[in-house]
Length: 472
Image (cartoon, rainbow, N blue to C red; front, side, top):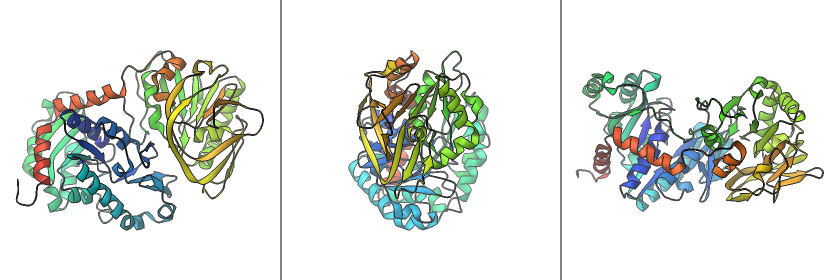
């Protein structure tokens, strides 16, 4: 099990690298995360799961499925979230206070974990946040509860780039219960820049204090995988490339699908009107709460800036919730979204329904006008995670059949996610392909892990931790 001293310590990245490294050794491995909080989701077998576990399954060369992330919490505001259980929205749990949810979720987490353990030689289990959040210990189902149930060896990851990593490791160890400390197989320092020799004698001193060895120091790794919640600043170092401005409203979702854009363009988060200046393309991504994010666009001044841009012929792309915002109006029938007036840049009307549409499949563009003609006839593997459906309010050209996309001059709206993960699409729009494919990224991460982390020690600890009592 990979746990962290905090969020953003690198648990997802380490888990992905470990999944690929173990798969390459011929081990039947699968990922697991009991409870994930993220608005980045993918369609897997049985429903939707967190994007991180979806990618970890691909790294392990197994089919992604809902038991790998049995509980997904999707924030809709600071005080409200949608709870997805085994791939489907649970409206009753979503309406409950978060402290009341844990007893209802324990059984589905436990059964999913036991089933996966019985079907694979090894699980790479990712924790959530920190195992030492003492205000949450009674309801924390994602860390030590899972470690105990799985009899897992735990490696604790700290982000050394932030500073204070040794204090974070020691403090986390100190706040853990004595029995849980026994599960710690090692510490892992992540995102290190410089000469590892400069860390001495701290790892040895930390081991003297805790009895836990430091099993590796991972360097800062430039990679093509998205962050778990897609909120990190886009990668720098893209001088000379076309600029893509992405509206970064509060509940933007599925930002992970835009990660490949960073390899071929200069991606910029847009939170104010000037961020649209000089952008060749503006993207309105998915949204977990369309009505609220529409209000944010108005208040930030981006709505007016988008209208000026379209009047001047500037390209604007809306994906899923972003397409709905481009329309004229949004109505909600029992979906909890609330009605709203859209930006009026695309003559469509959207109606929400209580149930989500979850589907994967091949999506193909029809004949498109400028500035989108380069996409004409192109296909991509996409997925839908949506509650709304949209229909034209007047004669309107379909960009994709079956109501999945519409185009009006410089404004294009599509329901399918995954457009920018297709190399042919990126080449058509921006004249270049991503230099690093997904499989190559998995292998590069596994190579780095093997070079800088004592994987053999982790495997020995895992075998010992999972053995029956008294057997080592």
